[in-house]
Length: 318
Ligand code: SD4
Image (tube, rainbow, N blue to C red; front, side):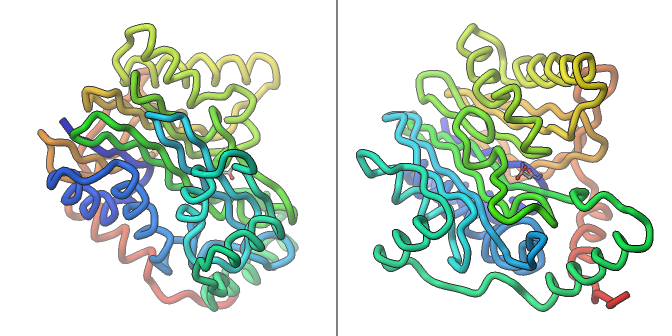
């Protein structure tokens, strides 16, 4: 059995590529890295890699992680600037005996030494988004943090190896140096080939409070199906946050176990995800939360076309 699942529609093309590799007996590490890089390289996705939206100081600072579910190796970078593919740097770091999570300048130094591709990740389009948001904030007090789509994936290959990876520009207009859940083990991602893996997108500050990815893997270890584990973890933690703090941030989780069964849960409207397994060609689903149960519907052709149209539409300066 093989399979791969990822947060958001934007992962679809990467999932397609990865599924070809997995079908041919490829490695879960190579497949997931290829899939995440595809998202990082696409200039119209505003929250991952090239074209990602900048922080308060108009700099694109990126977070990414990679985990190997066989060895439990973890590598991650946070607040790294000017490198094309943070996920590849994270994967490289996962092979180091120590120094597995590097931030800012230290991460950049490592990446430079290892010969990773440098790239100015701030596009003209992202600059327009930045200037527009600044004007909106000045005029209407819009919260700077709205709008975020991290890519998070879990992958299983035919040899039973599982991997997990994330990549994000984090929250738009974040403070310089702010790090979200995505490079943090147990929060943004976790995988254990003996059980399965999970990954998150949403408000990192809240996802971290519950180590939600680890919680899902723990529930799967107790014998739960990934769907049940995702629904339980998201519903419980959403309730907990609301009880203690009066509100809960956006939280959407994807998971797959080592049999290739998958699950998804969210506390928002309109969460999309992409999945492919030995039994299921690459597909995009939309998820609705109906009284704690998450119902997945295949995205229509119209929805998919509209998605690309709005992502690539010309952007006007306000
Ligand atoms: C973060 N979790 O940096 C990321 C942002 C995100 O969907 O997932 N957006 O907090």
